[in-house]
Image 1 (cartoon, rainbow, N blue to C red):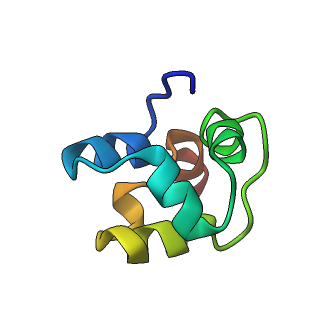
Image 2 (cartoon, rainbow, N blue to C red; image 1 turned 90 degrees about the vertical axis):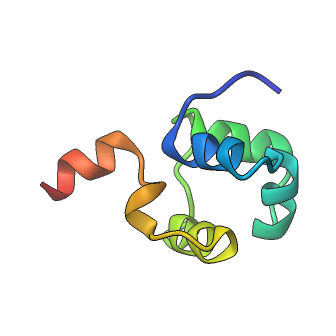
Amino acid sequence: MPRIDSPLTRELGKQRLRRDWLAQKLGVGPWTFSRIEGGRQTPPSDWYERAAEILGVPRSDIRPKDEVAAVA
């Protein structure tokens, strides 16, 4: 898979978890995960909420930069 630098993938790195593991937990394939995190595909509306719950972190820790800017 291509290297992606996003808040979500950085959190996976901190926890020493693999993207394909989280993709499976979220019910998508690794390439779909990469397209979503790379900004080439729109995530389901609950994508970051579910990921945050699985990782045990606040949603704000894994929110993409563009979503943070839209909220601010």
